[in-house]
Structure formats: structure tokens, C-alpha cells
Image (cartoon, rainbow, N blue to C red; front, side):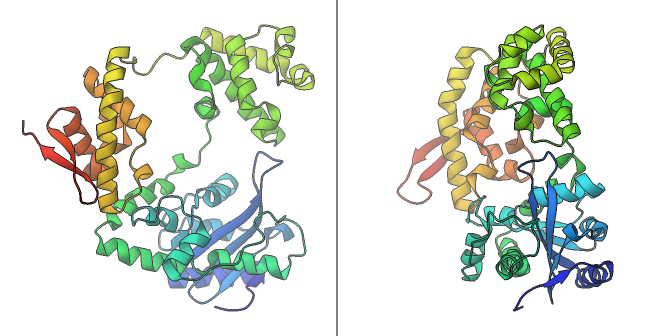
Amino acid sequence: MSGLPQVISSPAELAVAVAGAQASGCVGLDTEFLRERTYRARLCLVQLATTEDIFVVDPVSGLDVAAIAELVSDPSVQVIVHAGKQDFELFFDRFGAVPANVFDIQIAAGFLGYGSSLPYGRLVEAVTGRALEKGESYTDWCRRPLTEAQLRYASDDVAYLLEVAGRLESELEDRHRLSWAQEEMSSLEQASAYENDPEQAWRRVAGRGSLSANRLGVLREAAAWRERSASRRDLPRGWVVKDPTLVEIARRAPKDLRGLEAIRGLSPKEAERSQKALLEAIAKGRSHPIEAEHPAPSRVIQRRARLLSSLADAVVRARCEDAGVATELVATRSELESLLSFIVAGSLREDDYRILRGWRRELAGEAVLAVAEGRVAVRSTDLPPYIEEVDLGG
């Protein structure tokens, strides 16, 4: 493929591009969007790559891109992306389209020693040896007309998706990791990955860990109010109320406008505008505290788990390095500490921990359980991955 991509601005042209993707059974997909000033991302451009052509679809011209949403949810067409969750969110939010056959090259790379978050350009270079020119990362993609430089940049973002996917898939098969990668990618084929429940918005608020159970109930209701308000007004969440201010609202739980106005970070205008709904949310939260899903283990148990986590972390890292799988795909140190604390306390719920499900359990989860139960010891060695598990029996 060479030259500039074909710019599509009519339904007939789009139908041809979609038919080409359906005929080949695969399509590379990327989008350009703006969301700095809005709650919902504004779709500015859609790039498609088939085995024969590259297309740039221009929805800013008023073109209905529902046909692309149908393509995304067509199980007979493999949709190849790089870190594609935000791209899919656009089509779910706008059309309710749930991806049905996804191959995400960033996820695939995480199972082959490239790391789990390698940027597109660096991944293309690592796999194909081609260095991409960059220079339009912060461009206004909704401004028209598009420049030649923008079109080339947009084209590059899908031009190598099919080639890279093919190479990574072959390597995954050779290393018996394809089923693991497919299991991970299947999470992008669930509607729950894109649904936005206001009642769960509090779980994404930075700083919530400093609040008591009583005040977490207030945070839950205040965060739900912010989510609905931002959606209704089509504003970024932080433009309504920033996370630190939301946490402070939950901590103080004010009962009147004067109390709201005393909270740093909440503008008088917002306090005045939203006082009725926000005060109602705060009152509801005060009367409905969040009960701990599982009582936290004692501090003694937590200290023991913290020490054990060093051994478990070493085992996980060694196994991941040996398998060429990015450690962050398997478990974080905090996840291991939490898991181990409940093992020690004798109240483990295995479904709560991703390392004890699917491919993660096969790779490292069983080993972590063995370490926690004293069935395996750990020692250093002179050879990679420099950590060796010693079976103690039992």
C-alpha cells in the first residue's frame, strides 16, 4: 500500500470499503476523536485497512458510520486494533455495537516479551523494522480540510495492523500462547467492558481509599450524581467536580449550601447550581453506608501477607520472564498482598482474583498458592530467570 488513503465521505464509498473488509474476513481499525471538552468523545475520523486498501472515513461531513459499527460486531470479520478499547467504546456508546472478533496487537505483544503497553509506532518497528513518522499526535482531527500530513499519519495508524497481527499470531501459535492471548482479548467482546454504570463510578475515584465505610456511601452517591450530571451536560467529569474535591465532599458530608461552599475546589457557581441534587445524594449516602464486601484480615495477617508477597512476586516475575509474558498482565504486587492475606486468614474467594482464573492460574496462580501454603520454597540461581522453585512436598 502506498500513497494517500482514500477519503470516504459518501454512503456508497463506505459500502464499498465495508464490503472489501467482509470479503477478506479481516479489517484494521483505528479512530481519531476529541473528548477534552466533552463527556462523550466526538468521533472525528475512522481509519480502515483491508488486505488491499486503506480508507479514511470522515464522519465530520455528516456521514453515518453505522455500517462500521455493524462491521465491528460481525463475528465473521476479525477486527484488528492496537489498544482498541477506546475505539470500541465510541461504537458502543453511539450504536450499541459490541465487538465480536477482536485481535488486539498490544495485548498479543504482552504475551511475547514486548511488554503490555508498547506504543503502536514502537511495536511496528519492533516487529517489522519500519520506523513510522510521527508529528500529528495532538492535532485537531475535527478541523477541516485535513492536510496531507494528517492523512499520511492517519493512514500509518492502520497500514501495518494486519501485517503485525499476522506475525504476532504466528509467534503466539509457535509458543503455545495463542489461547492465552485470545482469552485476554475476549474481554473486549463483552458489553460489560463498555457499559458505564453511575452507581459504580465511585470505584474509579482517586483517593477513595482514605475514606471510612460510612463516607464511602456518600462518595458512591456523589460520584453517581457527578456521572449523571456530566453526561447530561456533556462535560468532562473533572469539569463538574474533580476527584480530590469529590473525596472531600464525601469526607465532610455537608448538609447545606453553606457547607458545600466551604469545600475547596467546588466553585460557588457549581454549589449553587447543583445544591439540591448534590445534597440529596449526600443525605442518601449517609443513610446507606457501604458495607465491606469481605471483612479485612487483621493487621497481623496483613503483615504476614506483605512478607509472603515478596516471595510470591519473585515467583510470578520469574515465571513471566521465562514465558515471555508481561508481568503486569498477570498480577500487581497489591493484588498479591490482598490474595495472600485472605489465604492466610482462611477466607479466600478465588473468583475475586484474576491470577486464579484461566491462563493466569496456569502460568503463575498455582505456584502462588503453593508458596502461600508452604509446599514450595524459593531460592536464587545463577541462570535466568535467577529464581528457582523447590518442591517441598505435602
